[in-house]
Length: 190
Image 1 (cartoon, rainbow, N blue to C red):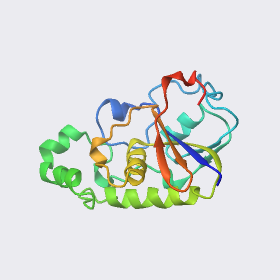
Image 2 (cartoon, rainbow, N blue to C red):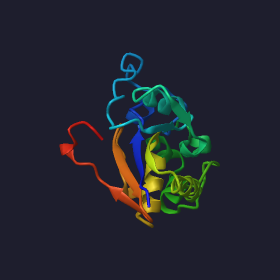
Image 3 (tube, helix red, strand yellow):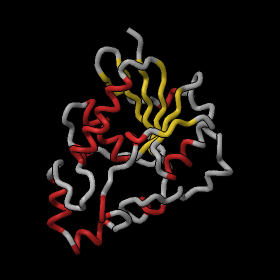
Image 4 (cartoon, rainbow, N blue to C red):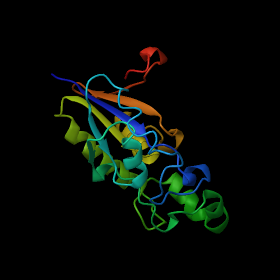
């Protein structure tokens, strides 16, 4: 059986992340245009490069290459009316709703997508990759990466996984999905 290698990379930091706001379709905080292509040689060979449709994922993907496929399944979690709202403000104005969302994966008090729905979407996308041998690099969002890890780890606590900007994890499929943590001795070549 051939191996599917999936490297999930979190988009670079945005002002919304810096201010602890739920995201909008904001650009990256960094000058991504001057860094365009700067991470092109981060991987051996030429992996298939995917990203979510949001501006921040497309700009981050441009750091890794020009041929990028936009995949709707890699979209950030739809947080409905909470888009652009600071978490601190929700703790004051809607503490019960925020707590319900944090505690219950099926809850969507913001009117958008629940964590459970996000998890189902990401699990379906992972399933489509199982018959796709080779290396896939996907630039996406912390919530999507959490959902992928939760699926692969079969029930790990979603809110106990921290995903830092530009962090990467690797998942491999050889009959079942396995998480592979990348070591520092990779000498810059993933």
